[in-house]
Length: 402
Image (tube, rainbow, N blue to C red; front, side, top):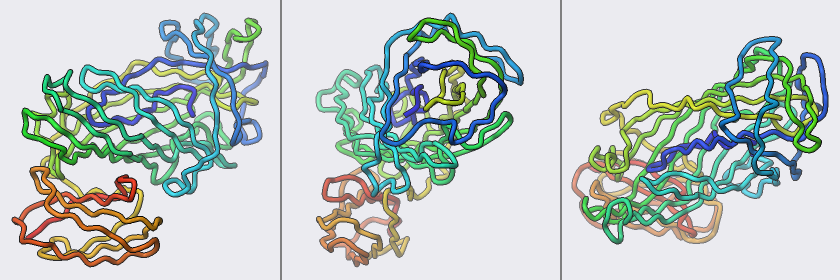
């Protein structure tokens, strides 16, 4: 979706790889300070355009302010890219999106680089163009090279991220110098962990990522570039948008904060916060920013203790009501079921052991399911998962049993 793939949400045991993929598209000549209207922004659903990646060493951070002259004629071109704005096919999870874009997203798992299948879901209308959701495909990762133990693994489930309020903006209309927009997002990354040295075998885990994105038009002026097609020098009148992203990661094992000993194996810390900045130059008559780049201001700001602030996880593909909480020997589930196949409700104790499973056989529609536990459980906090027929996590959370 974005020409620059820098706004990647961070997931458990995935340290962000800031790929300096700075690109611009083929362009012509425009002059004068601009206001960007929807009619000036040529992106459409089911369309595509060409772009070029650029050597990061030839990129410099732009000066902010009015009436600037930005000279990027020395940029070094690398690979040609085709960006396609496909029509959204996932109306269940992202009913308001009209564009989806799939790509492979490289991440670090310990010292090992793996690629996750990622789909970004965006909305393009008369008001704005921006990301409203993200899906990461399931992936099995062998951890033997990290832990030294055969059979150790991370089994990532299909995970979703949502922008509950405003989208992660690529542009808005009209767009002027000095404009400011903000957005936030939440990602619940579900996975099962097996690490023999800790006695962990397929224990359900969660990395909750909360992030904010501040988008501000911090400058306007003239942008000089080399047209990658004709190799002629051209000048564009542009707006400069700066996006500052701050993310916080919280890690859970069976519903409780993940022990530092486990986090240390992967070089992580509870409540870690990080920030990065992206610049986009926007001109009239193009389907995306003509030049995008991310500076290397990527840093850990704080290591926070969240052991006293475990919260119920409710940011899921479906809204689930469950009560009473705390429970004793019974529980009622209420939710809208969009499919006819059987779903599974599973309960795990603090050691990650599955202690209860219930099959929801009711066809699609409103479900009001009464569950009676088949034994007396020790008082404490339990972690539940509700999965559909394809074993995708539709909801999860914490349940206290007295």
